[in-house]
Amino acid sequence: MDRFLKIKEMVFPRDVLVGHKASEQIPELCSRIVDGNALVVSDKITKKILGDKVIKLLKENNYSVHSIIISASTLKEVKKVERTIKKNSISFVLGVGGGTVIDVSKFAAYKTSIDFISVPTAASHDGIASPQASLKESKGSTSKRAVSPLAIVADTSVIKKAPYRMLASGCADVISNLTAIKDWELAYRLKNEEFSTYAASLSKTAAELVLREADIIKTNSEAAVWTAVKGMIVSGVAMSVAGNSRPASGAEHMFSHVLDKIAPGKAMHGEQCGVGAIMMMYLHGGNWEEIRDALKNIGAPTTAKELKISKKKIIQALVTAHSIRPERYTILGEGGLTKEAARAVAKKTGVI
Image 1 (spheres, rainbow, N blue to C red):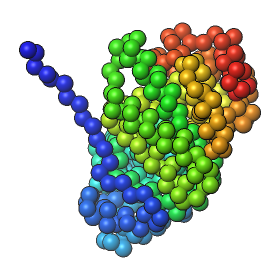
Image 2: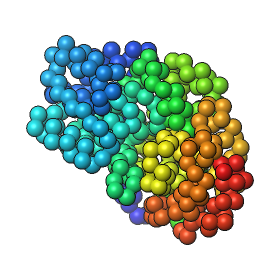
Image 3: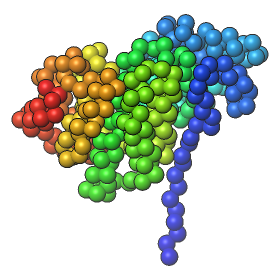
Image 4: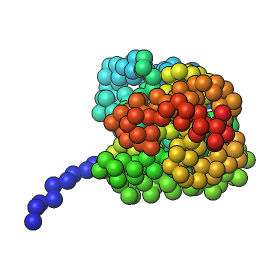
């Protein structure tokens, strides 16, 4: 019999703290799982919201702490963080902020082979717990392999103060897992792509949690944040199991990446993925109305008008989405949709 030689590494968060004033436990957490010099990464706003507090807490507990402010999720900002890490012999990075801060922090940590602790101040997408980083390049957004957080500290009392639109966007991002999984299953059947039942189950569980608890989430209470963040963390762990973003990124994300390029700054990532998921589920022949109704209940966009994106650009994104990641097979196939087919699906689902 042939020897089984397959090897796969799965890296998960070691500690996850979610709850009221969880950020106050950061020094004790760090004392258990890391040592050496710390770097706190934030932007101008999140530094005031929580970054300064994290710096103060760590210094009071005798940590040598450096800090840096970033402004965008670009490779230029990643390199700036990398230089700070090398110059100051940093041992671990705390990304204190929203998606931009966390993506830059985790990718810089990956590039310098040090530990990363995720400290979200908003829950706008599942990147708070995933080993993937979304960065902006000249050709648009791109997903890059990064490091899985060693720990996640989600302070619900802080996240609740962020605009509700961010939480709704994060929930839409998790709900869109439902079409990402279907695309992955399709690629498994038609292209013999490697598939993980465990990762797919985790991803689906996260999406169904958000669907089921939509009534709680729309209250925008700390309990709502607690529920939504749990879904985002499970979604991130699913990607760690798979070793890639397949469990949470399919045609709906490709649609969103095109919109980032042709209609930048109009809508949030999760909002675009949610609308994309409505249409992709229709193409899969699944229950697209369930996705639409959940998004409406939560308060996330379901139409081009609500995204503040023109009908023309929605159709353009549908037609060209397949070319964003040609190696990733989805319901859009290898040739994509015709303009007529794109217009039909957008109309039938009420997106345009």
